[in-house]
Length: 385
Image (tube, rainbow, N blue to C red):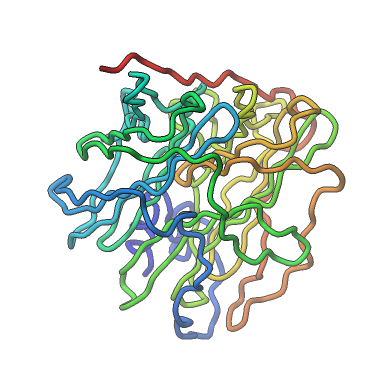
């Protein structure tokens, strides 16, 4: 019923009511109506007005490309941009914006310093890109938000040119000292307020007039001994009947290029980056190769699913790290906290639904980690005319 609708949101999302893996999610016997308009606090990009826009014919469709912000953090700058489908049919991004063979990411989007004559390429690390990867299909009227991170230009550089393959160049994009304030959503009971939230938006579908948003929030990074733990919340919002649920297999999975990814349902694509030292911390694994991360989280309307993952801890003086999520992008400067790990309160059913307001996606592996990779981030800079 909702399969095609959510396929517009994410190519990897599938409806579990009918089952894409044999699993069944219970449905409410009641049939409540969609509930009003989406909340005004939904975390669209930090800057509501883009710095620059271009309307182009792209993949035989009309799209409006926007650059929202380019801000400094640590040794990097992060670009927030997006595309709105102005046509009647959906179109896919795939590998069109990538400079890496067979990769589906936005690594082909570059930043040029016109004064210093340097071109900056999106940073990468083993098995991934410091950018939005595996971008999904863009439905009619839908806006897809994207991010990419680069080595920071010298501090005196106040504006750069941004080039998007098959779209063109956005000239004189301002480089700001920090990101604009972030909108966040209310946290479930027992969890701290989110550090930041991001949204993936879709419109249309088989429910006339409905809008669906996949919303991800980062609650924090927690240090315990030689490891750190990141806690995320993810769910559906918008004008959607309460009883609908969808699986998110692959939402946080690592790129298919990662040779040690044994399960598409594992959340091994979540990465922590030390933006001061230029290192990427990848998900820890136990003996046998299973990850210490949530597996096959389920999204459902107006509830929150908690997703967690374990990593090698950075040096004790490191107080914040960037959280990089496939499909969704970069959450910069998430603080590292000490003390007890958060525990959501006992879940309660949502009004008019059989679903709990909070669920926890269990880890794939259990036990002591035997492998917690830390790899270098490669941020290339090339001469530019």
